[in-house]
Length: 107
Image (cartoon, rainbow, N blue to C red; front, side):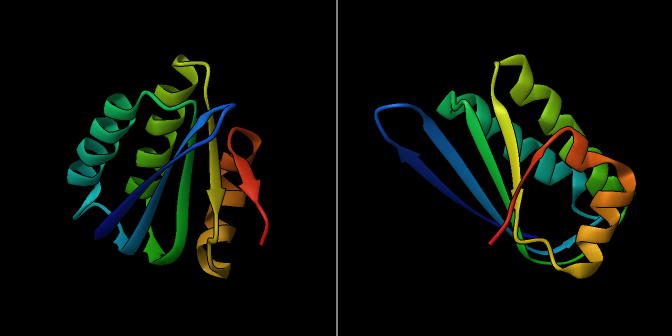
């Protein structure tokens, strides 16, 4: 799993964009969780955008990573956005109910 981070700041808010590439599964979940948590805490952002455009596979461990980041960002009165999920990953996200918590960004 590769992670690219981009911090966007404007007058209103900071946006942390994290773009993931690869498989989001039990093999990388813990390492990814630590990386995401570190970036969220370091940047003190209010908006966290998780770009899943290059995620080829996701299992329940990946859902757990996303749910945990949702909890972390909402404790800071922030918002989690998800964008770019392919058809299979999007289906998992819809079935799990994550879109009732996180905002989906349409292309």
